[in-house]
Image 1 (cartoon, helix red, strand yellow):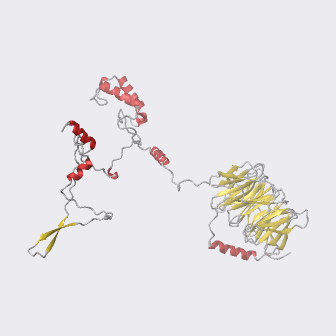
Image 2 (spheres, rainbow, N blue to C red; image 1 turned 180 degrees about the vertical axis):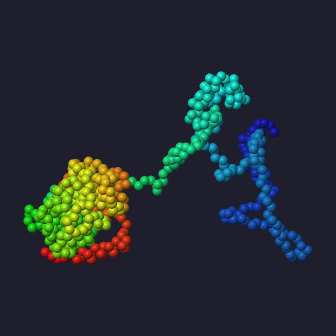
Length: 554
């Protein structure tokens, strides 16, 4: 066939060109004759399920009518090799390596905090001492130790070498301790013998570098920035020596506004008008609740004391023994102590018709504060004569057991520590501005704090072991102090006028303040204490039975 004919056949595509077959064309050709089993296109294999397939063959028997089926195991499928194309090289490394699991992989070593292990760490090297060692090796030779060539040195040279060695090694501890020229890691600091303080300091540094857990964080003391309740107090007498605010056990606040007495119930917020004085010129000078919260004593400017049954809104009794206004009163079971501007203190037994059972005489000016000790055996009084007196509980005309002098102004703020019976806190007026803590057993002042403001009231908190103080001019604020150190925890501001008096709630969590700006504010300053035990409830029952014996005498 001529070349023209072959060209025409190629153009007309009468037969396929004689070129090497493609890979997809060669595979069926290689598999011919092996008879692979045809897969059923309608069969869908179950996932993760092993199929049990068998091969059946027919065996002829002498009996022409019988056919025996013989089961054979399915032979393993032979995977054909991939055909090799002409002109292509075989790919090297046909054996594939299995990828190791993630757990078996080695992690890339991270950089240590001390730096690379092949590069010296200059931060941990003593360059001066390293230079000294290099010079020493050059002078003494490679194989010589310290001191082997010292015989060749003069006495002056030996002294110079020892001085140099001590000067360089002073920060390293012992002078004879060896150290390498190059340093690659940060070594653990060694502790000299007997230096327990250095060890403690290093341990504290390592502990302080660790993160602090939430349970180990110091609790932050939070003080209120605003009052919970703000009530108007119109007609309030702006007098530093009066005590016209008291918070009773029944959670009712008694407030004296001019010639009237009002009751504010902290449970429901209701306000009740209790009584008025006899004339407009007469005003309320002091108020004091009995321990059970049922009876209220009202001291007036005309030297009279009125006892009221608050639940029945009925006046029970009127007591007269002083010659001037009664500016302060304090209950001790069935005994009511009263302090007057006539500088005297009287004890009244409300169960008796002859009520005045004791007189305390020592002060020279008006008595403006009275507080009984928690056990009821001592009475502390503060006066405008700058003195604090401690009186026994007795009858007759009594002298003070102890006189505490140290304030430079009137002492209106007096408060006993509820957990230490011999600790008394007092606060002075404008010319003093100090809070003093007294050990009454020794009669000595154990602490004195300058507050820079007039102190009007003091109160202790047993749960948080703190003291809260109210102040007048110039700051007109509340301050909280830690009892153990008398360090100021913080201040609470809000009043525009001086705070005349402060009273602690029966739950010991809030305080009420009465200010010259004619407002009454309630502040939540402490956490709620736990519930009282059965012993305290039995004590309250005894107080109720004693208070029920108040004599209804004129």
